[in-house]
Image 1 (tube, rainbow, N blue to C red):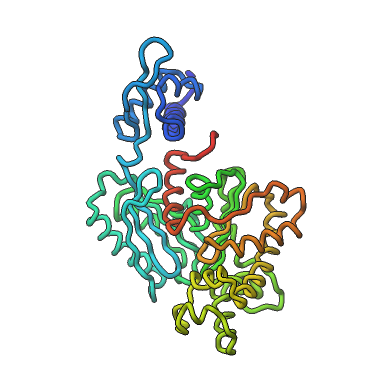
Image 2 (cartoon, rainbow, N blue to C red; image 1 turned 90 degrees about the vertical axis):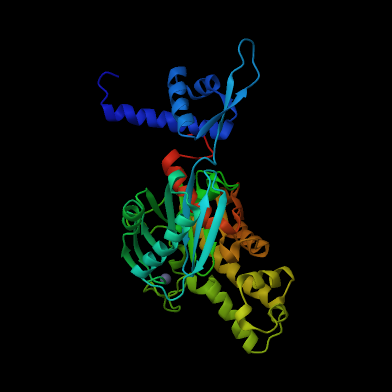
Length: 404
Ligand SMILES: [Zn+2]
């Protein structure tokens, strides 16, 4: 201990503090003495950590618990509503802002369509709405930070959006821009990476080796290996949509040909529906939309699937074949414990899940698929906001469902 520098000491204090806070969050209401015993930390260290946490409002005392003889110990509980965070989820078509509590629950939210806004203007668009959101809420004093998620290649350490073709973003230093404007800490992460963390922390997939696959406007994945996000050198790991499935296929915006995205994303499915409709094929999609092509959205397609519509089932079969093959590659590459399907096309899509499951059972290596968990996203429509919250909470408090 005597050789320990001051910085090391502070680090250990912080680690103990976050250990104590996490334990109260997971196991509370709990007494100080139980915290000390269960974490192998001295009672005096626990007492000083708890004192700080109470002073800052993260923890409250809720009165005496049961005694096992002697004085009844005071129980402590996590206080998720004393502070809050701002979550921002930028997608290629809209921007969501939310105020959330420390259990990643949405307290207030707003949504703005992004149309025709490109490049640096996306950052200006964000700032404009964030300004209003922060003043309307009048909540800056209890805000612990802002967490932003964006699709594309994101250098999260530096907080730079390196590359997003649809939004025309190229090396936009979003974190620095927001930090200097609002004077509070800002986190920036790729949207899929944020969602895989959220499935683990706040959803029903508490696995250390977890892959999240999103099918929507585009196609992406977030990969968690031994509880750590796989970023790669530039933050580009997990670009699942741009894996090659056809060497002679259509040209993709990424510069390659035959990318998976071109075969199974919503745009691919939508154009297949349109082709069928214009060639006069009968489908329930016509009835569901009153013949209005602009009303054909993923929800309509999924409803047609549920009703057993032949066209929808045919498309589902093709999508499942492509997706199944790509997922078998992921299983063989990463040997995950669980795989989750999400995005607008994946959410609540039992028909797709079942078809892909059949494919996996037929084609993945038996030893790797034996106890593999394969399911649908458990986060609902606020998935990306919960994702943004998960990034911040993981970094600030090391929140997790599992004991480290
Ligand atoms: Zn591509």
